[in-house]
Amino acid sequence: MRLVICDTVDYVAEWSAKYVMKRIKDFEPNKDKYFVIGLPTGGTPLGMYKKLIEFYQAGKISFKYVKTFNMDEYVDLSRDHHESYHYYMYNNFFKYIDIDPQNVHILDGNAKDLTKECENFERKIEEAGGIELFIGGIGPDGHIAFNEPGSSLASRTRVKTLAQDTLEANARFFGNDINKVPKQALTVGVGTVMDANEVMILITGSHKAFALYKAIEEGVNHMWTVSAFQQHPRTIIICDEDATLELRVKTVKYFKSLWDIHCKLIEDISQLKI
Ligand code: GLP
Image (cartoon, rainbow, N blue to C red; front, top):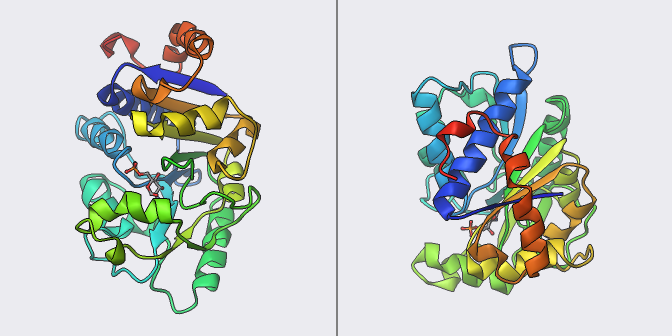
């Protein structure tokens, strides 16, 4: 596992966007070979999306041959509700880039048959040839997508009832009224993300420091579903300083000592403020 510790949240955005850009470019996607990427929502990846839009507008990258699969979506929230993940993705990313809407896949939380919707999503990922890079964020309780504490680490895309912690964390998006937060969501499973060739997880803020500690310094445990990625051969976690507050000094020092090696993973390091 790699842990890239950036000084600031802004730098996490820049570093992760550069990494995504480099991965897509190195893959050399074309009409017969799409780059398939898994995408998260939430506050954490917003800066990365902004940077990717900037890179697109500067002509540095195209999303023409990219297929996307989003991690999750609320159940029973209309697509045009400002907190739906459809709304989020369109307004924070897709409307600014050259992606073909046909290549965008977001679970439909209003589907008549939710189980079928989840099965179809898994099938579509398979038909696309699997996910090359799955990007995720986590909740303070260490959940990835909506795989709440206690979720099976072999889980697939399914309907999930949200934990109280998640409802409380997300109430801020619904006028601080917990009763307005949808109680269920459709989510990819931990197993679905594990199947990707590479997993990149963004973790920022001191409120997620304990989850980062559980993710990397303790054992794999379904109560902290993000810890499952210790067993993935290619996991890269990108975090800020605040998120490292619960880690051992020796862990932080070790990963910081790899900074130069990590920087080789992204293009054009001369432009970075190190
Ligand atoms: C929700 C989403 C997760 C996301 C998490 C963190 O629970 N289902 O996919 O990672 O929020 O969001 P934020 O980045 O706003 O802290």
